[in-house]
Length: 536
Image 1 (cartoon, one colour):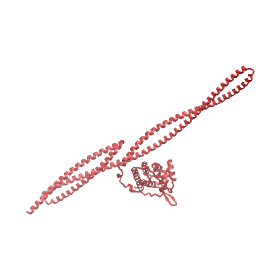
Image 2: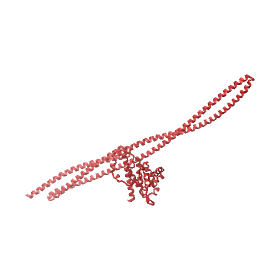
Image 3: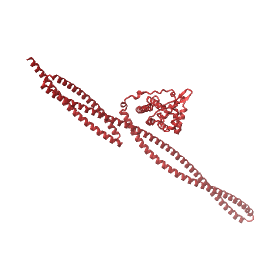
């Protein structure tokens, strides 16, 4: 395998272990992470190594320098929403080197939960990355997409990192392998699993409530838009009415001015008439009295007309004031409705972001379920291997039994033919006893090993049953778990059959022991008879 490919695979595996360890430790930690948290620091070190892999060096007076700040600056060109974060990193005091600016950018992106999105957009534009990276770099190859996909799970972590007092320019990038050499089974406790499942159920309920509120808000927005359109139509109609009333008011004002002028002229004319009549009064008193009474009547009528005109003017003025007040109230109502629409749009945007976070959390839970299924399959393979080994031991026992029976038959024949072969038979019997003892010890070890494996299988079955009870809503997993239960039942039946065979083997071994003791007694009797014959 190529050394460059090995480097990429090693970096990808380290990124997997660091992301997994960070998520698990953060969930068990239970609160916001800070810059002193060791798994978080190790994650940034591993991510920095991934970004530096295959990076081209820039020539300067002091030699070649490699920095991943250049590729990160491309993000603001690809994603306009990253421009504010990049400019804030440039303006941070105390950052003098490009490496320090790149580390600050990574920490800000993690706090804002946009690290995976920005890096995904960056690796999708490989023509831009080719200016900074070699063709064999991690971000150019397929392993870069895998590493960026792992970063999506970090959106469940809340981090609060203070970068003002931290020396990001001179940080040491050393990977601590001791954090990843622990047993994975000890880290996956039942408490963390239950916490994750409780969080999943809570997020599902929250998603349902948010969808209900979203539908309610959408209906309210539709109703407000309809009322806003109606109010716009009414406002246009009222404006037309106000313009018509203003025209009528202008006409009435001009008419009232004309009436006042005509009355003034009439009064002046009447005064002239009165004067003439007073002059003629002396001539004829009766004609003067009649003229005077007519003038008084005319004055009363004119004064009454003037009062009527003034009342109409007051009514028109009051109507104009009321129309102006109504216009102001309508304008205030329209402004309030527009503010409500803006706030509702903001709420819709927040609901969309929460739905995206929930989708990422569900993807992480699906990955954990796949890991559990892989563990179950590994245990099943282990059990099949144990069954094969037990079958081999049974065959060995059968072969030994056949050898023992053949040895007994040979002993009887040799005892009839000659007594010199008794010693070799005794040796073979001793060897068979040794093999029998060794087989008994092997069987006992195998039983203990099988019991331990049965306990492990029992624990795994309990975990599987717990997962079945918690994830009954998933129809696809029900079929797989049913198949696993059937296989477990078959394993139990196989284990029972193996126990029965072991018991039968134990009975046969006890019978063989008794036969061996009888053979030893016969041999002793033959030896005593031979010695007695020699003495005689």
